[in-house]
Image (cartoon, rainbow, N blue to C red; front, side):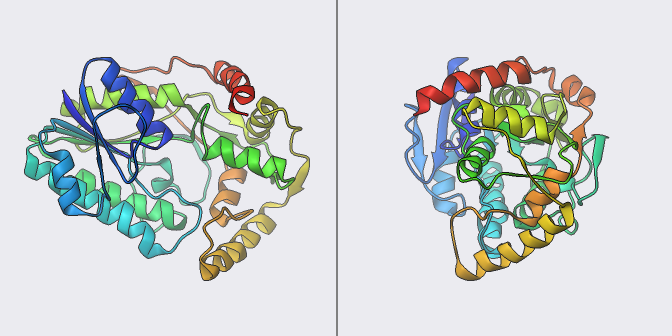
Length: 323
């Protein structure tokens, strides 16, 4: 197929583009700066209709990953990229006659702060999602799925906490905090959390491209299906980087309240760097959230091939090479 992948400079976007290319698809990537992938690309902003229209011309399928994923920023900034940008890409795809559309979402769109234990893909709910990122992604998922038609089925895939070598989001932030002496365990550290190794997430999105005609209008959560305690995840990621495990404990209410104060300060000062804590991060670290993967695997005809243990081994091998 001729496939357009937006967000080609992201870790997951690049992995998806490479997999599609390697299996023989004609791939184009679209993002604001050169990807370095050696794949045909268009440069531009997803909120720019002219640039998006040019990029999507001739595509038979679209995988829309481009998003603002920063820990800080104003609501308007998140809306512009995540909501308005998604609307622009969906409308351009419809006008271009694209035959299948995969929207890359997040489980946070259906997380209202309570524990999720063996959960399925609940409905996206902007009014209860936590934080600018989750609320904007929830709104974007709803508008994307509302556009699903037999002529262009839309499926939303929610990969949960994707990580692997080169990851600057989960792994990068944990390691940076650990090196600065600011990595803390929120609450007991016993909450079970699902994560997704990079290769598995990329394979799931490629499977979604293939299965989109049968899955139009649906949302599916993707993870390794191996929930682990937060403490273990933090310890194994820091160990892979050659760092000691976190030893500081912060009570959950203190972390949440402190995160709210920090968020307001960062937004007021228009700071672009990562704050030491946010209320969303505090809740994520203190609350169980893992998902029943049986329906996802049946629907996508997909299973993860890299276990968490193998993923941590690969991460440990990569860290010396990254220095």
